[in-house]
Image 1 (tube, rainbow, N blue to C red):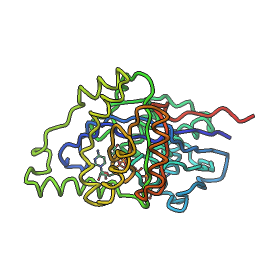
Image 2: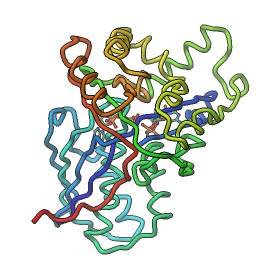
Image 3: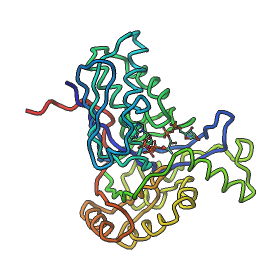
Length: 308
Ligand SMILES: C[C@](O)(CO)[C@H](O)COP(=O)(O)OP(=O)(O)OC[C@H]1O[C@@H](n2ccc(N)nc2=O)[C@H](O)[C@@H]1O
Ligand SMILES: Nc1ncnc2c1ncn2[C@@H]1O[C@H](COP(=O)(O)OP(=O)(O)OP(=O)(O)O)[C@@H](O)[C@H]1O
């Protein structure tokens, strides 16, 4: 039995370029892994089967569309295993369809867990390539830490970061569809008259002020540099998120933004104590389902030591 722990992400910068011919957008995507974890446990089985527990378990598909099942089958096919056998149990704490890459995290965790269970010792470079086939956010869940994602987010460079940052995540009722949020971003650009194609929108770049804030471990500077080009689209589809962002800021957050494609809202706190206070205030604010205080960066998908 192999258990892999895998973190959620927040995008501290999400610069979105124009719509490409293949339906994706080029990004300047600064991923940041935070201490909200799913656990994927692989045990020997017949075929690829799944189970899931956690508050959002009812929204997780248990068929072949699940990213963990797709990851197991992709790894098996890569190694020419005709008849892969594994049961994958997902202990889910990352909000589903929340903009924190929960499904991607499970895909990355399943790659690592099946690799260990089947004794394949796949090189990390190959695991990263397989991860990119599964989805744009999956390679980062393998890497963790803080990284700049280029292309559609799958071309990664680890970034230097000092110390620990304290975060609060406000979890919404219900999710948002990632493709729908990208489409809304394009629609808003068309409506504003700027155009939404690759020819219209400059390729985004990582913000030097943001990179300096990460490297120096300065939360006030990071808070000032947080940006998300999908935020207007997420707010357009879910206007009530403005109330959530306002509630966290009123409670003392030094920075606030929508996490990725939303609807989870992310708040940067000046320290751990302030993060706990902001989470408590958000929980009673009536603007979200629940809120979690945590920290980061944390490592990517890794095998947990067996419990004694
Ligand atoms: C919003 C982010 O979470 C930020 O990290 C990611 O860009 C989304 O990554 P993901 O959920 O892994 O997305 P994928 O499964 O690769 O793609 C789902 C859909 O999102 C849109 N998509 C995704 C990534 C990207 N760079 N451009 C896009 O337009 C496309 O419509 C695509 O069909
Ligand atoms: N293991 C999984 N866990 C959760 N959802 C999954 C999983 N596999 C497939 N899905 C499907 O993917 C959809 C998006 O789920 P996910 O939790 O990954 O969204 P997200 O966090 O917004 O993604 P991202 O931040 O990468 O755009 C779900 O609604 C579900 O139908």
